[in-house]
Length: 105
Image 1 (cartoon, helix red, strand yellow):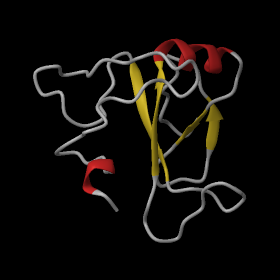
Image 2 (cartoon, one colour; image 1 turned 45 degrees about the vertical axis):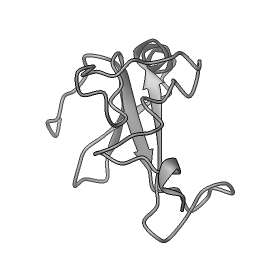
Image 3 (tube, helix red, strand yellow; image 1 turned 180 degrees about the vertical axis):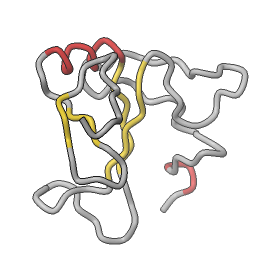
């Protein structure tokens, strides 16, 4: 792969990616550093693919990374489109901002 097309935590020729939903330009959360995909007012999401995908399901360790701005995240949460997962457990709950109850309730 061409080095200029890679995105690493140490050097990001791509800069901070825009929101994948509304395409809003997102600034870097730490402008004085400015490297890597660290969006301000948004989240960076990664996926290793998924068995059912007809677009991306590699088995070689590659992953996709994309950003969702806070406005789109809030809208999706209000429409009950996001699940909150618990690391190490096979459980998902509908998520909304402010609902980060990590207990087993």
